[in-house]
Image 1 (cartoon, rainbow, N blue to C red):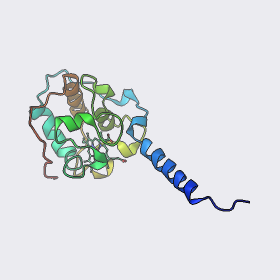
Image 2 (cartoon, rainbow, N blue to C red; image 1 turned 90 degrees about the vertical axis):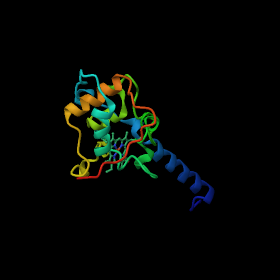
Image 3 (cartoon, helix red, strand yellow; image 1 turned 180 degrees about the vertical axis):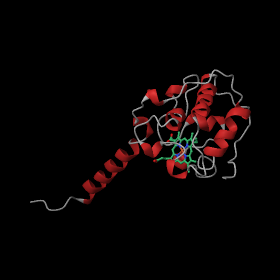
Image 4 (spheres, rainbow, N blue to C red; image 1 turned 30 degrees about the horizontal axis):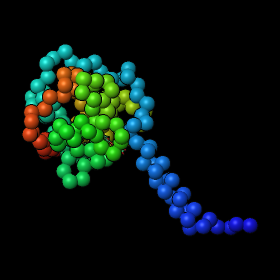
Length: 157
Ligand code: HEC
């Protein structure tokens, strides 16, 4: 009778576990689209309307050397690209399908991914429905971002 797994099969088990947990990321969310607020009708100006929101509520964690979940929002390129999940951060022209919108609207089925994280909203305020509407309009209007502009975290209140 075989009592113990050989080291090789243990190693295999471990590798399988690691790859399982690595795949259990944002890409697997179920999204309740009815929770996503309407897009604003306004023509959005990134610097005036969006940059202050990202700098107050996101960039402290999603910036610097080790951004949370491998997701940096310091540059347009990084913000679009996304982090550890296989889903892009945003899809130009398709705000309701964009991960950042789904997370800030709390429309995903995993509260660990509500952004900013609910346990820290005194420091990093949640976005209002109107602000989420502006983020949506910004994405729908092509996610324009002045070239070379790098965001910096605002000082938390
Ligand atoms: C206090 C730190 C913190 C703040 C502030 C924060 N996040 Fe996050 N974010 C995290 C953590 C931690 C995770 C990983 C969640 C997990 O593993 O449960 C994450 C994950 C994400 C992801 C998934 C990235 C990927 O592709 O893997 C996105 C997108 C995201 N956040 C967007 C935002 C946006 C947009 C804001 C601002 C409105 C924001 N976050 C504010 C900590 C933060």
